[in-house]
Image 1 (cartoon, rainbow, N blue to C red):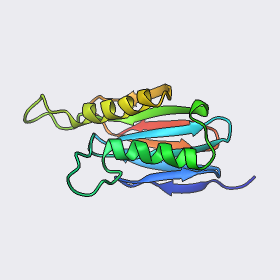
Image 2 (tube, helix red, strand yellow):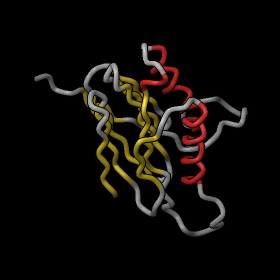
Image 3 (cartoon, rainbow, N blue to C red):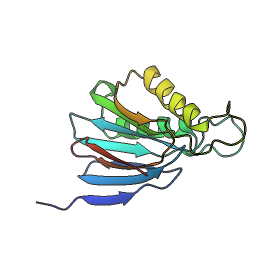
Image 4 (cartoon, rainbow, N blue to C red):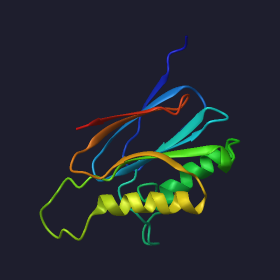
Length: 151
């Protein structure tokens, strides 16, 4: 049996893998979405910190709308079809309670991911979002399994 490729996903990054891989990241108010193709047994994961790129500065995957488009396009360009994809969403915690309580970047990040997935008709089959704790997330691209540890 072959050893899985282990990848650490940093903030603002995206990863796609056709091979059996274990992608790990650590989240606070950031959000990660795992897209998995159940036909080809491949997957992609992002890790974004801001919900939306507004057109100012560089359009990087640190923004939810850019990160979501990036992993979706990566899956499609590697042979996936939208109808063969499922999504799992993680993170978006409220780790800081001081200041203006109406500003919740975690909730905005979750909403950004869900808005994109709804637009492209990809079902969210699992999520562990919100709350007051961070998470360590490990995504297995060959099985679609995701393991979460609350930090």
